[in-house]
Length: 195
Image 1: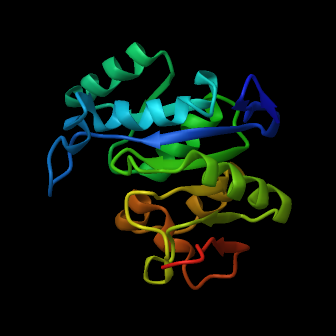
Image 2: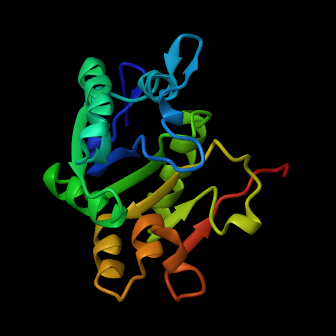
Image 3: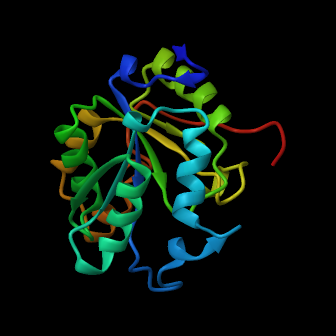
């Protein structure tokens, strides 16, 4: 549903949850680096705000003191904030969705500033229509056609809860999607016309 030129996710009990932290080992504080005088996180949020309402966007960061700077950016942008476990990312998503009563999650990572909101909306509608447990444009990674930096994924929160009950490794808790590979779930990888 589009109201005032914005795609309204509340109708679908859905929220965009952006996973964010400053503790990257390969490139520390990468989401605080700037593009056109905006941090990468702000750049990403502003792209989303062209197509979605503030109340439909959530940033899920960690409880660590060093991530207070993320909280400050989120408060400045007047969007929703959730703070949770740094390493147990799947639980952070589940708890964020529970707090805000979201049945469906659009997962973005804050180091993917080149997401295309129009493409997200197109594929989100298909995700809902086909009733996938999981779908996205980036996993499995070896089969993806969209460029790195434009990643988005769709989950049902009940699906996340279901896999959270399994014996997940620390890696699977932190990265979420590896667990679903080669298992019998209703999943789908969206592909572009060009690789």
